[in-house]
Structures are given as C-alpha cells and as structure tokens.
Image (cartoon, rainbow, N blue to C red; front, side):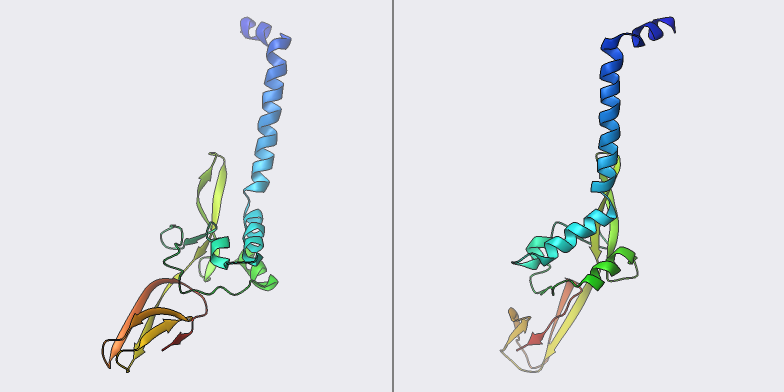
Length: 167
C-alpha cells in the first residue's frame, strides 16, 4: 500500500492519470448527447428534408421493427416518402411500438452508448385486376404484368406509406 501511495505522489503518474480521467469524462458527456434519441430524431428529420431521393437520405436511419434489419432499396423501391412535417417529427419522440414508426434501440456503440434507429412496421399489399396482359403499376413503377383475368399480386415487407396502384 505504501508503494502505491508513493507512486501516486509522483507528478509523472498523477498528471497523465488526471488527463486520462478528464478525457474519459468528456467522452462520456459528449457521447451521451451525440448518441441520444433526441439527436437521432434531429438527424433523421434533417435527412428526410434534404433534397433528392428521400429514401437514399434516410436509409441509414431506418430498420424493420420486427427483425432490426436495415430496410433495403429493393424493399422500398415502390415507396414514395412524403415530406415529414413538424408534427410528425414531434410524434416520433413520443411514439412507442404500437405506432407505425418509432425509435428503437438496436445495439450499442463503443460499449457505453445505445444505438437507436427509426423502426418501421412492414406491411403487405395485395393488388387484384381482372384485365389480362396489362402492366400493374405501384406509384408509377412497373411491378408485374397480369397473366389472367383473375390476377392477384401480393407484395410483402413494404414500409408503411401512401401507395397508388394503377394499370
């Protein structure tokens, strides 16, 4: 014990220890703000409002609510995301797992901080047509060509959004 006390009295030991301890405290304070739910929502809303393809801007923030896997371009290819209003962004802060989209913890970052993502509930969509040999469109994108007069097409794992089916 005397050996430890004598080592701690040396300036060569306690000054680097103090600097290291202060750096650790600053890292924990910074991380608690940077990796918080509120900061994620701010980044998500900012990405949502950027110009260009909305899904490309937000895809790093969204996961499926049931599997925690990131939503892929193939799964969202027919989805047209409308611009996010302030009221919708505020609802996201208070949303829980019963809502269509909510904030979900999907892991940890640097062992100390929770990793949050926006969880989207998947939906399936069934399109029926009674016209043979016609293009089936979803949000003006070709999905399939009907092959009978009683054609049914089911699309699985689509993000909940507004869709318009046409032929």
